Length: 77
Image (cartoon, rainbow, N blue to C red; front, top):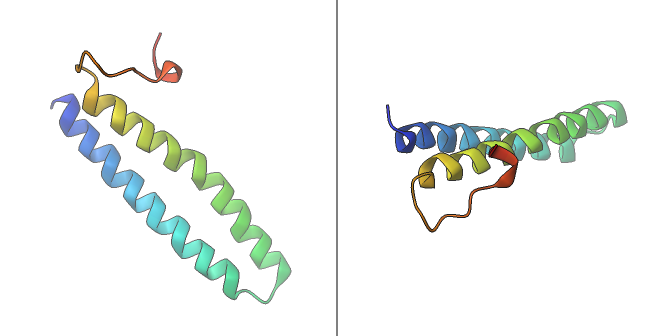
């Protein structure tokens, strides 16, 4: 398996997480119970960093061998 193939997996996962975030936002807006809305906001807040990291890692693995690509310092040693 190549890094570009791995990148596709990360992109798909990021897409699924983003879809779930959108679903949860719709649910949150339709909530009449404040506690339920708060729990949904908390879940969204937990998913956003995961979604961001999936996108960053997808970009890193996709362009890892491109000489012109400035790698994200968070994921390099």
